[in-house]
Image: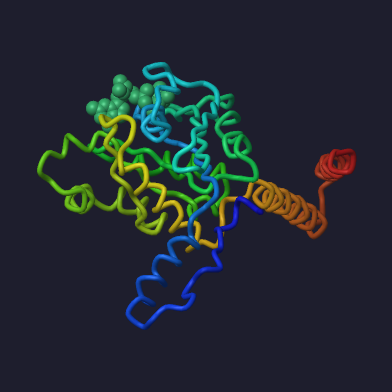
Length: 268
Ligand SMILES: Nc1nc2c(ncn2[C@@H]2O[C@H](COP(=O)(O)OP(=O)(O)OP(=O)(O)O)[C@@H](O)[C@H]2O)c(=O)[nH]1
Ligand SMILES: [Mg+2]
């Protein structure tokens, strides 16, 4: 059975009366949406609690804390008879440019859980959220392609600092930058309590949210499809450049450089 497709049950609505049919139908719907395995990639800037969130999900101290991760690491566990895998990734830099080696490692994350993650968990600590934070998120998530947003859930950490303020009020109060991020992922967010370890219903609730997203978006993020789309974009950009070059009457100097461009394209 393809583990990436929702499991389908054949028992829906079998020989039941009208009163039972509603509950049976909703139970069948939930069963139909249940994924046989769940693959997650945790992303975010440095230090918001990515690794601890990974540990909360796995239910064990698998990812090192307080040590800036430089490499993607995958850990797995089994909950209620199904496998959950979590890939922890290096965080991007909040104010300075992220070193290219970090970016290269970050984009490897999804390929560690083939054929691609069911969800990217974008970890954001509750607190001040600035325009720079928003643009850094946009910059780094775009490394995975525009479709990454269809598979992203914001996970709020450090929510205990809210005390009696509701998360909805915090989101409203924090303003348009944070709201932009939430709109991009269709208002999918989850508040995690990283001080609870081990068996806890919150992990189940998060998994249900992932399943709901997968069913709404018609599947998981596909590493192969994204690589293909990226390839096509690059080819299209190359062709557009070549076309532009052909349409402009080149000066003698341009002629030489264009010829080199074509040469370098054709030798690839
Ligand atoms: N109080 C509180 N502390 C948290 C929470 N999440 C993470 N922390 C703490 O914040 C620190 C950083 O957490 P990590 O999980 O290592 O952060 P990270 O995002 O993996 O950091 P890098 O790998 O360096 O990018 C640790 O001391 C955690 O215990 C939270 O929700 N509440
Ligand atoms: Mg970490």
